[in-house]
Image 1 (cartoon, rainbow, N blue to C red):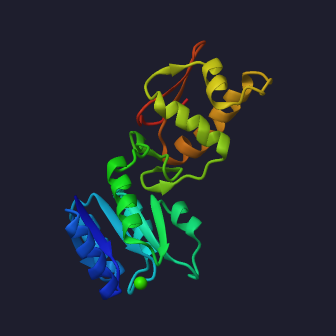
Image 2: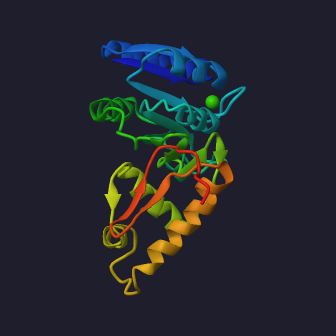
Length: 229
Ligand code: CA
């Protein structure tokens, strides 16, 4: 088991390292956020122990950048009791666990073992259809690198269509999966929202990916040049 310990308090880092090495772990120490981030991207670690108050780049920014770079190694954050940050922040940013300083070594050990056992959680996969990209983990939609803001309903509809790229889906299927069961309006609402999506996703880019299949429903395809009608 290989652990990256990002901690600038040398004495504490050494104590933790000695304890973990005695338990059979391989431990690398980095003493600032920038080197910690670099090491995390460079070597395969089973778990990262990340202090918050760090020189050059704080632990929160390290964590944020790690996840942006799609490095999903489990992270246990070390928070200070009277720190300016809240522990819940750590979870919001994608930490897998945290410990408040000062902590008991045996507790750290137990938590690390639990994280290693759990492994990197499965993250939602980024969906693509031609140049259209939808990243569920960041709730981000973009085409050719241009972010496209969508309302919650538009996003839900697109997510459903992209999960069925190339398939014809009926209005009834869409209603059932994208609108909640309390919705009692007609199927026309689907048409309206397909129109909204076309305006945002296709028209500005000169492509046609949202096709109407007469009498059957809709189909999302990879990029095809817009046909003039
Ligand atoms: Ca520190």
